[in-house]
Image (cartoon, rainbow over all chains, first blue to last red; front, side):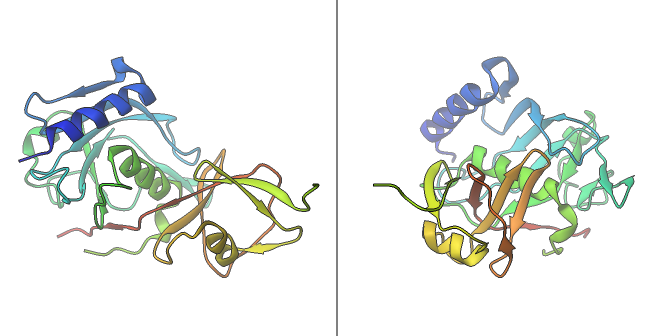
Length: 144
Length: 76
């Protein structure tokens, strides 16, 4: 069971940050969608939409792990636009269980929180981690 | 009383750092951020991750942040 009071407070914070029109969420809180999230300048687009999958026990210590973004992102690296590491174009990925989302023009970006601290972590702090990853994704080693 | 040094912002808080180059480790110590935290500089290009042994030429008013480490998963 998710911490609904916590989620509602976080959704309110997301609406203040991105604008109420940009934020939508599932009635059962399975996911939150944010339109027009800013991206680092090294990417080929200035903004992306994001679909954040909320774990079953969100708000009680379970970290955020699953994120979908626009399917056409590229990064400038050594003078060329190249694929972003850990950004999976197909179902042969850690996102196999999200068949419904893959049918809706999303692409899975594999950035996992290691742990979740109620005082420090939130959906906004996860988005900060994602932004940091996308600023230089080649520096992070693959860890499963 | 006048203060020598530069004012920077880390996680929204004003911090004064001394003149001259500063290491990432020193910045971490100023803020009390734990060793496992990721330290980054905010620039128009994005977030530049700062290593502890990195020597930084810091400008007045620069902004930094910290965040929890994260992991990326490989293809299974």
